[in-house]
Image (cartoon, rainbow, N blue to C red; front, top):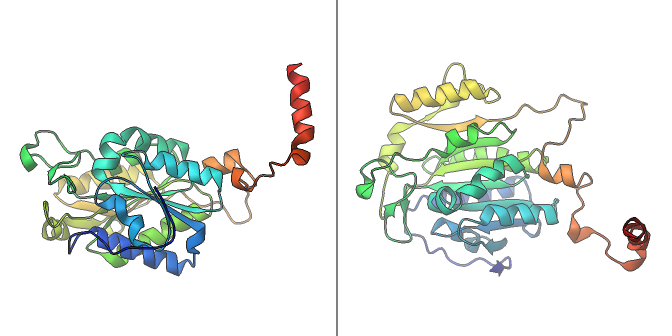
Amino acid sequence: MVQSAKSIPSTWCPGCGDFGVLAAVKKAMAELKIPTHETVLVGGIGCSGGIHNFLEINGIHALHGRLLAQAVGIKLANPKLTVIAAGGDGDGYAIGMGHFMHAFKKNASILYILMMNETYGLTKGQAAPTAPLGYEGNIERPFDGILTALSQQVPNFVARSFSGDPKGMTKILLEAIQFNREGRGFAFVEDLSPCVTYNDTYKAWREKVLDLSTLPGYDPADRKAIFRLYLETIEKGRIPIGVMHRPPAADAGAAPAPESLELKLLPDRTGPVAAEIGVAANQAAYQKLLQTVA
């Protein structure tokens, strides 16, 4: 479903962590002065996937688990757009896992905000792929999206925010969106977004979160260092947040090789939506093609 830039009242439960994401997206977009008509938000399935309905923005309600595929397609169709995908952990880490993994490899300059609450809130509280042992009878160890993201040796931007820290979340989203707008590739932000109805983890998470940037040896350009800090933090019973991977920027004056998918395929950032499709402009190329198959 394609939606015009007309918002509707939120349907989320009062206190839902997704409100924090909504506010942070608004603040980041306003601070960067990005016009709404130049922005597309692709929403997934579940409570969080409806976020585009509550913004005055162009939005698409994607198929279950397929929001990243559609977001990449939009970016390639018009690379000048700011493209954001937003959904939950059930959507992204279950049925959407295949697209999640390939998004890092493809490295299109889109932002993926994944709201993680360890439960399927819309369908009444079943265990999500991130659910801890014992939650609703869960006997499987929880999936860790950040460790998976860090394992992909592609210059992506990787971070985790917490809805209980809106200022920190806004700062992370500002950096992630700017990373995209510079054509540097895929930005992934997992937000700890408690479900106050079925799995209210605000208090527990607030006591456990720890910004890795406050620890000795923190270097977001060094995957090995972040892996070590991340695992050590988990082993101490804390939850790592903050920027986990930030590829080093090119030296001043340098012309780095393009890493993002859209710049590799469309160096001039002109996608199909802006291409000249008239007969006169393409006749020479068509005649050349005919000669090669004759």
